[in-house]
Length: 109
Image 1 (cartoon, rainbow, N blue to C red):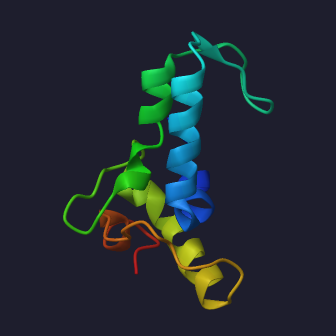
Image 2 (tube, rainbow, N blue to C red):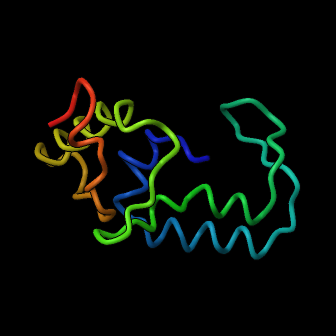
């Protein structure tokens, strides 16, 4: 699971580079856990699950890969992404933004 704040505001700007990195890590290392610097330690996982955490970055207009959070919860991040893009703070998302987050929830467009 990759936190939505990363996938909606940062990683979706360069999804191919992110996916290449995730593929490299999962092929190069045979691991059984990941220890992030800023979250709970000792997350049990494996290379396959690590790679799958970034699957939402593989979305296309014809094949939207949903994220774990509900669309209603993603709507706020979608709105923030749209505003930051319009202001030129971040580039345009390279991942399909056709998720239900645009139509559902309190912050829907």
